[in-house]
Length: 266
Image (cartoon, rainbow, N blue to C red; front, side, top):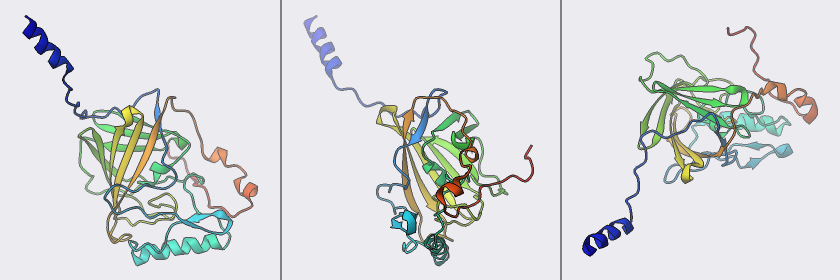
């Protein structure tokens, strides 16, 4: 009897093996969202070619990307230098977030001050930004559409893998104000982005790592990281354009236009 008790007590005291990560991370709730906590720039991903940083402060304190980064193709470097020259002439640096344009992929990930929310369904995952209620649809039950119609967020297909949501996106539209970082790093129609979303820090932090591949803009694929902290509140109404009335007059600097719908989309 004593031997049985001793064996049972040893078994109870033995360290337990760590739990395997769940196949499907719990990203969604009506009561909480995720807000960017890692800043305006992409963080480097461990062991990967890093993002192009925004380190040059121009006239008026405006910041532009590093147009001399060796990973840029001549076409991309020329476009970035053109934007830098515009800023040096007294224009503000472009920011999709401040001018109410979509940030694209992966640029939308670094939209700050407003949380994002997830809705996970068997057939798709919806990623919803409180800011202007932008919505990305990640399809779980199909591959890429054969003839993708280019759009701001492209054609995203996903799967769950080792506790992560993996999202593969193509079909991202070339547009005058569509940038990889939502500021001034350009891309072509061949942009291909793979993102991996996972929950860390005991459920309080969401990490999104991504890899960007676009031979027309970059000599080699590069990767980055964005961190979000959990915010315990439901989504609220937030309209970008209504919060920018008189913005140009207030700052007395030339601004970029806001998107305008000339016809209703319904």
